[in-house]
Length: 185
Image 1 (cartoon, rainbow, N blue to C red):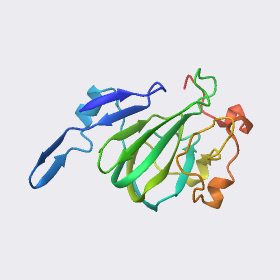
Image 2: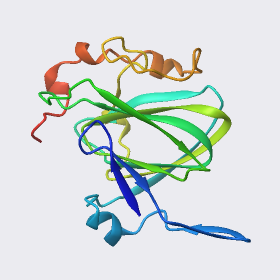
Image 3: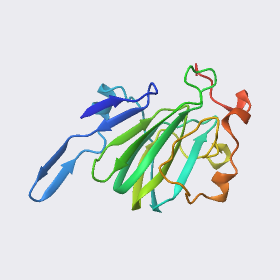
């Protein structure tokens, strides 16, 4: 397993070992001891899966105050996966990083608590699975509008399919500080 740092401290690209032969391949998608040894020391309590067609954009989501770490992976298809630092007082507050995840490259993205998460589908379809360190709690569901000009995410889709809910999220800099995780939590 190889772990690569991104431009945002704590957001990590994971490249699991893949064992291929004429029959196909085998890989461990998660093994607690190995991930802990690489600095991803998280107890995951919930797995989620989504299916989306090309052009779909989901995000930018987070929970507050019941924060979640996430480990995101694509089983089939391709997405552009994005994390935004929303930790109030962080030196990288409002900055984003993005990576392509696909069934072909088998990469994963680890997004620690204190970051908003979203993705857009760049293939005809995408099956996305992700592990979460806290249960989904709809009453604490929050988000940032996907095209927030103060963040400036360079999405690879010109006219994405976005839910009404995701279109209605506020801009990051319009969210009160006490509604965001502090940098030193």
